[in-house]
Length: 278
Image (cartoon, rainbow, N blue to C red):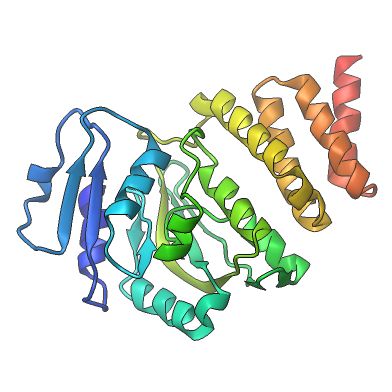
C-alpha cells in the first residue's frame, strides 16, 4: 500500500514537489523497497517508533516548500490533487491557512464505497457559517494541505495524542483565527482494510481517551458552535460508550444538552443509558 501511495504522488499533474517518507521504525526499512534515485524523494527512518503525530511533525520540519500536504501510507491521491488544492490556497491567499478535499472511502472489508468530507467549507479568520464549522470537525489528516509557516508557527500536531491529533489541530487553528476551506471533489482515496490501522475497534480505549482530552482542551470553542458541538460531542459520547466509559458517556451527553437542549440524538442516547443502568 505504501508503494501505491508513493506512485500516486509521482502521478501528479503538478511536477514541482518533494516527497518525504517517514519510516516510523518499521520492522523492515522501507527505503530499499522504494528503490528510487529521484532527488524529489527523501526517506527518513526513525530508529524506533515515535508515533503518527511526531512522525508527521518531523516530516513537516524537513519540508522545504511553502505548502505541505499529508498522505497516510495506506491511501492514494488522484492525479490532480496537488494542482487543485494549490489553486484554492493561492486563490484565497493568507485568509486560508489549510484546506482539504472530499475523500472517496473504499471499504475493502465490506466491499463498499462512499464519500466523506464533501460538505463545503469556507472560514476566514473567525467568520464562517455554522455549516462550515460543522464540516471542519470531520476532516482527516490524509489529504490535508497547510501553509508551512502556519503549521510550524502553531507547533504542528499534538504528539501526546495517539489518535485524533488532526481534529485537535483543526480546533486549535480555528480558535486562533486561522481560516480554512475545502474542495468538494473526491481527490483522495481513503482505504479501510483488514490490516493494522489506528482507527479500529482494538483501539477503542485510546480513541475514547484522546477524544475526551480534545473535548476538555477545546470545550469553549466547541460549545460556542452548537451545531459543531452536536456532531462532535455525539461522536465522543459514542466512543466513550464503546470503550465502556458509562459515567463519561452520560457526562458528555449532558454537556451537549446544555447548548443543544433539543438534540434528539443526545436525549435518546441519555434515556437509553439510564434504562440500561436501571
